Image 1 (cartoon, rainbow, N blue to C red):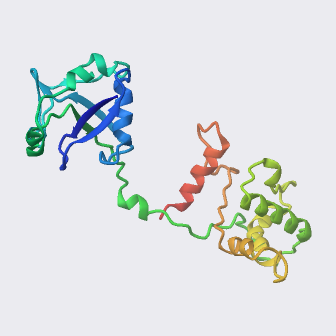
Image 2 (image 1 turned 60 degrees about the horizontal axis):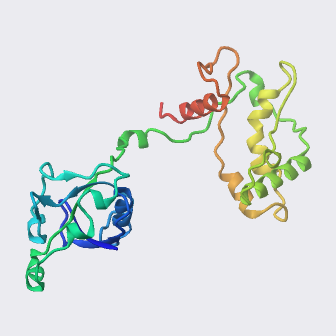
Image 3 (image 1 turned 45 degrees about the vertical axis):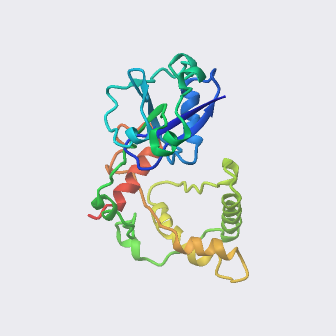
Length: 259
């Protein structure tokens, strides 16, 4: 086991030690440094340099002012064993007495440069310019305001929605647990009107009885956002999307725009 003393370039604080085997590689040394609590950057990328100028190791006092590593040897070969890059037990053995060590003149073996992570800056406007608003009706004719003659089987809908909620709550992702409600018929038969009314049916009519349905599920239904997306009659086309999910998701984002 070889004890190596390391220091982080540009960071305040004293050097810290890590223990590695001579057969360990530079990559193993990086992992040992990350695992050391005194290092303080457990998930960071790093570059390692031999803390040596000529034949002399830098001391703890000297590394505190180091910001330029261009004159140091870069340990950039991940598979290289530490014993062949100048960090064997023989290489790091020092002849400094304990008084010199206490005065900060003990040698440091490895300089660590932490690679800064790139932060993704999201403009504030992009966070403020999207919000949900009531979608427009799918029906643009006079029939949009007629009384809705509900012919849906509420019992079957309630059962399917209840099973869907339970699967979602239990983390089951199998498609058999997630029903898809499909409305098929010819032109002018009320498909669009039915879809316009569907959210209201789910939110207010199916579970009107307080003794039916999970209270948490009913609360989610009441607070659910509704999106109405159509690709018919010359409305916005999916464009070059090969995945229908992408086309639908893009239209949902379009509906969220503050315009």
